Length: 179
Image (cartoon, rainbow, N blue to C red; front, side, top):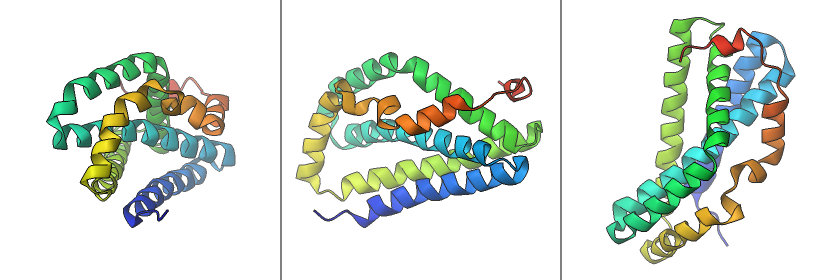
C-alpha cells in the first residue's frame, strides 16, 4: 500500500509544528520536560481537530451522509468533551507559557497555532480527496462506525502523549491565561 504524499506532508507539518513549538518552549523554559509537554499537547489537539476535518470534508462532498455523520460526531464530542476541554486548556497553557505570560504575545501565539492547525486540516482534506471518490465515499460511510469504535478514542490512541501532558506541573501563573 502506497502512502499518499499529502498524508506524509500532513504528518510532516504536524511533526514540524510540534517540533517548533517544543523548541520554542525549551528556549523559554530551558526545560526539556516542558518541551515534551508542548509537543504532546499539540499532537493530541491536532488529532482531535483531524476528526472534525474528516467530518467537514465528508459533509461537503456527500450531503446524504451529513445527518448521520453529524449525529455521530455530536455523540463522539459529548463522550469525549471532558477530555477535549482538558486538551484545550493545556493548549492555552502552552501558548500562555510561550508568551512569557504576556497577553499580546499570547493572542499572537494562539493565532499562529490556529493557522498551523487550519493548514493541517486543509492537508487532511486534500489527503482524503486524493483517495479517489469511491474510496472517499466508503471512508465517509464508515465515519459513523469509526466514531463509535474505540479507534476514535484519542486518549487511548495517544496514550504516551496524554500521560506526558497530564504529568506536567501546572503553576498558578499557568492558570492565569486569558479566557
